[in-house]
Image (cartoon, rainbow, N blue to C red; front, top):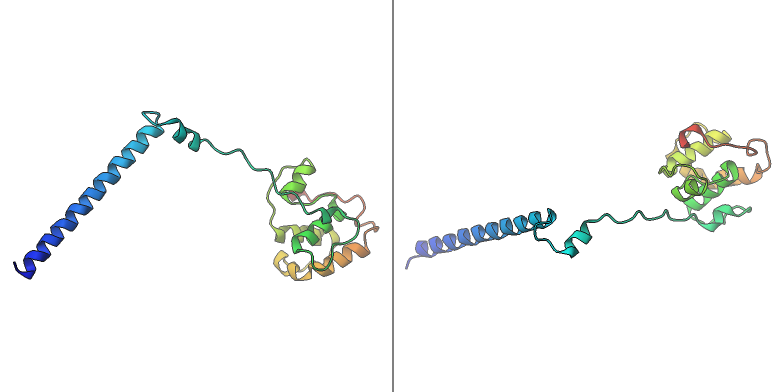
Length: 161
C-alpha cells in the first residue's frame, strides 16, 4: 500500500462519516417536526413548548419611598427612584408604573433623568447620559426643594402616560 492509497481510504471514510452525520441530523429534525405537529410527540415536549407566565416586575428598593434622601452609597437607580417619588409620586420603573396603575412601559434610566431634569428645570442643557454624573446634585436639589411649588402637585409627563 502506498501513501496515496491510505489517503484515499481516509478521505472515503471521512465522506462516509459526513454523509452519516447529515442523515442522522435530517432524521432527528423530521422527528422533532412530527412531534411539534402532535404526530407522535410525547406530553413532555408539548409542555416545554407552552410559554411561561410573565414574571412580575422587580419591586423598587424600599429606600425610594423614604422621606429622607437615600445614603450617598446607594445605587444610582435608587437615587433616581427617590427623586421620582418626591416629584411625581411614583417611580418610572416597571414596578412603580404598575403600582401607580399606569401602563408598565420600560423607560431607560437616561430618559427618567431627562424627565426629572425637565420637570425641575435642573441642568436643562444636559442629556440623560450627562445627568448620570449629576445624580447626587439632583438628590440634593430635590431634597432642598421638597416643599417648593415645583414639587407640589406634580404630574407625570405626557410621554410616560
